[in-house]
Amino acid sequence: MVTENLKNVENKICQACKRCGRDRREVTLIAVSKTKPVEMIQEAIESGTSIFGENKVQEMLEKQELLKQELPEQELQWHMIGHLQRNKVKQLVGRVAMIHSVDSIRLARQIEDEFSKKNKMAHILVEVNMAKEDTKFGIMPEETEEILRQISQFHHIRVHGLMTIAPFVENPEENRVYFRNLHKLLVDINHKNIDNISMDELSMGMTGDYEVAIEEGATYIRVGTGIFGNRQYI
Image (cartoon, rainbow, N blue to C red; front, side):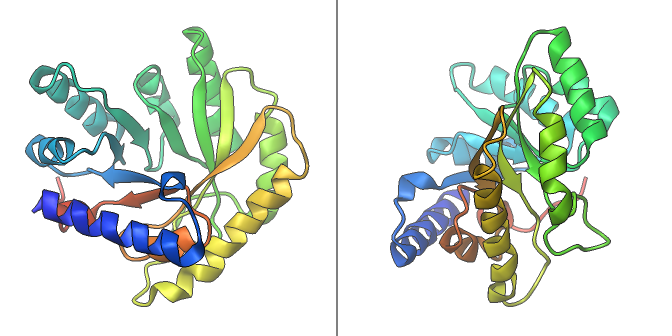
């Protein structure tokens, strides 16, 4: 199932890139493996996937250890895409390629503190609540520049761009406005030339709307159900 689903997702990514005149290499697929067993992740790896996204720190670390035992030579990249509690940050040092969900200056300060202790660089995206939903994490769009200017003062954090989680909708076209506006925000901030801030990455789009997100400039798409099937709650 996973292999066939990955082929289907890859085909849709290619079609979306073709529609908007983008190079397929501009879009990175993150296979969202939260709640999924290691066996399914192994099938994805065998099908050529090496970049995975997890919501919970402990679950990610446990899977990393299991996969090291099963596939010791396999180079994998792990992205933290879920809401991150400050008391979990220290566990991520040296274990995560990118943190997509930095949603406050307090969290950024904690990341700076923990990564500085081991002289490591944290690579992050700032999460923006583009739809301004009460149920979602993320900073407000109008606060983004100020937050970024504060984060730019930290020496062990490198900001690579922005992330958003769009509303759950039946028609993905309804989310186009949020993706388009996040891209505009990224371009506007890039023009400010803030030191230590690179606005190169846009993490947006999930199983239901990643094709629209690609058309609006996504460089990371986070696909779980489309690859692994419906979520298993553990």
